[in-house]
Image (cartoon, rainbow, N blue to C red; front, side, top):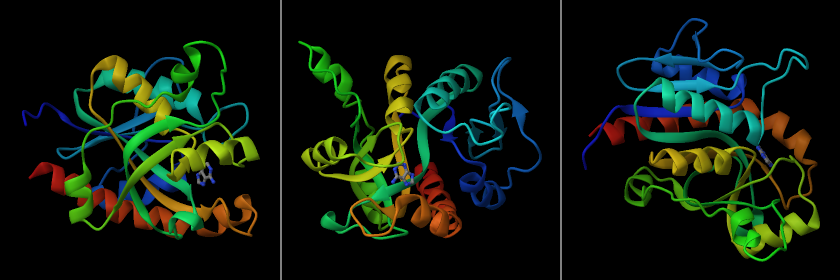
Length: 234
Ligand code: ADE
């Protein structure tokens, strides 16, 4: 495969990104990506990493699909990316064998909350964006390969659960499909690397389980990212 540029990792939360930045030696405050965006970017000879940044009004990480799309668009214009990796934490599913700390690489990427029952718009809302075939490398690293499904809520209502079941989602996140949407437009290969913080169909309230496991899952994500980036290099 002809490789141009480096992998571009797109992340939403500072806490998720910190262990990766430490492991990859991406120090300092990062560079401002674009005017009017809070996103910051770091680069070395292995990788570019961009984080959506802190929302100045709410003083929290800019999570969700809107910042993810804007950041990805700006970053693709700022650096030459061989592949874009949407990286972060996700919810997993007990009924599909998921567990806390499981590492997942996408082989399908869809939206579960774009419900548009109008002629032609159903498929548009679903997305089902092009995903790079990473299954061989992912399996060789011991990662699970499956459907990553994106929505703008941390919780899952029963209509979301129906759709997550329909696609046999193994990861529920809040950014991947937005990143994939931009990558399709830009003609840049896309993948997602996610680590499970909480079990969507478990007993524990998502927000409690998420917060309890965020640090552990972020460490796991940094190990997985390090392995994936090195595997892509070879
Ligand atoms: N990120 C981590 N856990 C999540 C969940 N359950 N839903 C969406 N995004 C998440």
